[in-house]
Amino acid sequence: MADTALTAPPRSPLSHAAARLAAATRTSGGAIRLAELPLLAQLDVRLDAKGPAADTVGLALGLQLPLAPNSVVHTDRATALWLGPDEWLLLGRPGTQRDLENRIRTAAGDEHVSVTDVSAQRTTLLVTGPRARDLLSRGCSLDLHPRAFGPGRCAQTTLGRTQIVLVARDRPRAGFWLLVRSSFAGYLVDWLLDAATEYI
Image (cartoon, rainbow, N blue to C red; front, side, top):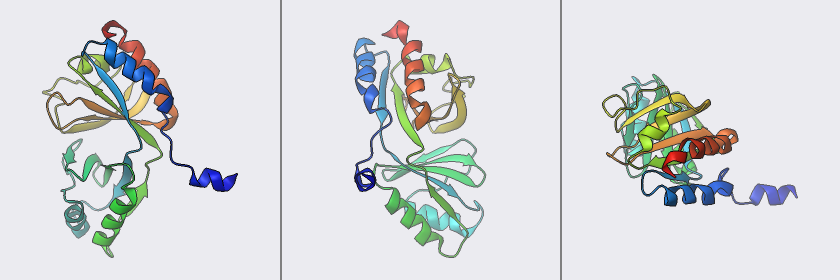
């Protein structure tokens, strides 16, 4: 039994909600789109932003770690979110966490760097459409106007009493990513669907 559990393929914490999210998207008439982006690679990276490891790690990943507070840098390989002066969350395609971690550790060499695989900790919801900001504003205290929270911004905040990392995607009208702890993901889906009632 234990061997089976260890070798079973990973399962999204919101696999049971996919049909509900798709139905809400269909019935909204294009006003909103809700979907899960399951099993993204997620690495918590801590290092000295002013030390040599920051540059070498950035080169190995093909991106420069963002240094401005609450900013995001995106490439085809990965997305880096600024979480603090010495902390970033690195997102990648499902199954790439080991490759990303190896790149970071190899690039850092003897420099002090902490890399923690937190892929199982959170799942990601995609919220797009012309009413996406209106929907999120119902339960988020941040000013989500594009001038205040435009593309390439991120923040640790709450939505409907749930802690999330909110990311304004890097293109206009591309919507938002909501990174939520797996144990709260079902509650957040319920909240989103309830808040979106007038659109669906």
